[in-house]
Image 1 (cartoon, helix red, strand yellow):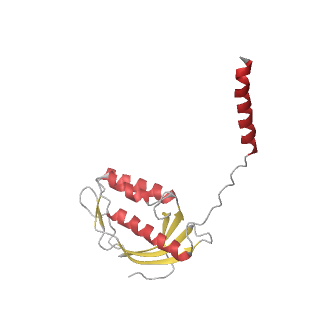
Image 2: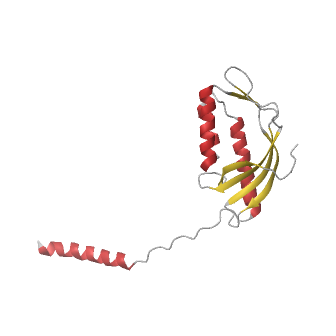
Image 3: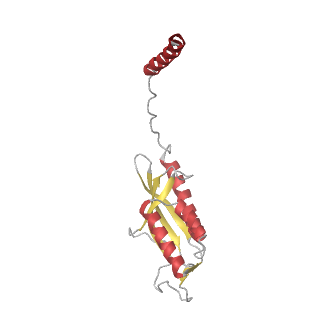
Length: 177
């Protein structure tokens, strides 16, 4: 019986010795997702346009339509969109009309090309929001255009490589309309 075990023990010992001698594979070096600023800005533009298209397609009576909006956002904006769309749905709010991007330009980019900012002007003049009674919730003094800075961050969860992280008012004096 001992003679039968000897080859098995020898085989295990050789296997262990060989595995101890193999070098571990080096960690792959991270490469930038985009090769240059133009490529990063093109991805940012495609991402933001997809986000606005998803917002325009939302039917507040059908929460399944919110998913495309969430798919294009990350971080605080994602949380804010989830909270806002859910509240509108619960309150029976209805949105009519579409937002239209009129200007979308590069604004800033990180050295590593993993964060991009766009300057945007969005025509919201045809968008109206109604409460469950049919009364408009839009302030009569609302401007026809939103002037914003859109910040996008690198993400492996996006087909463009970026997700919209924040949208903030732009107050640099640029006129949209």
